[in-house]
Image (cartoon, rainbow, N blue to C red; front, side, top):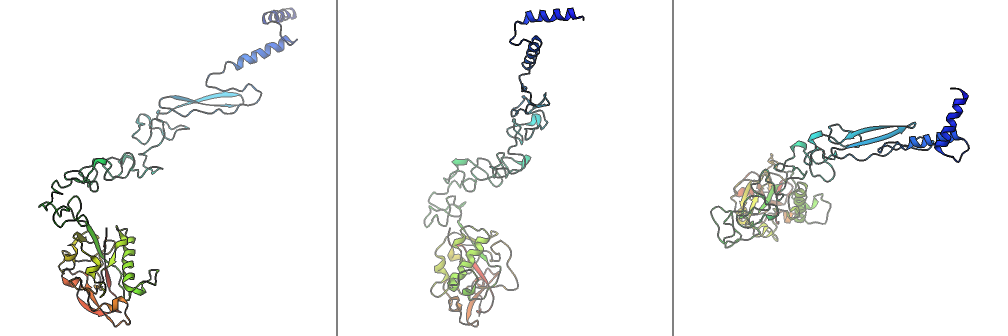
Length: 386
């Protein structure tokens, strides 16, 4: 192109564009071209119009089935990377992505976030067994521990009406999730009932509202002790021998997480506090930690004819060993023996106390023979409240 033609093109452009503020028509043309280029950026892109490099833009959290553009710019160039929650690929910004298996009930939600069912215990969850979560199992689909009253019938339960569980006859028991015996509470003891609190002589302290016995635990100490219980190292040297023996039983019960551990006492008598008086009248069941029934009622317990011998410790382990002696100081009538190692505060190891024998269901369990107070022997511990 010759100089005449170039000059003609410039003049033509000048009249088409109009009179710019600048005296340089070439400068105006270049400015407008730059402005035009900036205005054509896409709706999902962020482009800097300054002379500096733009920062990376922020992205939007993924939603189910929707494409999200993650934009970045380097050296003035813009690129777009799309990811979709539900495409089966875990992208940046997603905690998980199981594709078409994303579900509110599954480990990955439709929003690609982890939830109950991922097999990992998270904040707010009581349990999480992953795909093993089920409402009829030990861990529900809501990651809650199975319990009577959650409206799901789980192992050991035959009914569960949630908040509608009731102690009324024929209803679902709120403690056991089994039906209450229909005749329980009809003011008489029926053949299919262990007891009835409404029957003559019945009471709720020994009989439940579902007509089964209230149960109290009796166990033997796994260790053996001389009869001067004042010398037990239990942190309180001001206790008497009998009080110290009671505290030992409470400590063992608490160690094994037994209910009402604070109510346990040693099955010991003194002339001032015979065991029959210490136990009081109880018509419920005594059982060991297995649990195996030992006797029904305090009178039967002290009668000398147990349903099963006492052999287990507070953890349910067999405590039978070479030494089967047990300090009692008690007669089978519930009265105190004359031989109580001077109320379990002997002046000499040669003082005497009455011993029972482990593994015996006859009268010998409580009253076998006398022995010197320096002889190591077990103790019986019995729950005495609920």
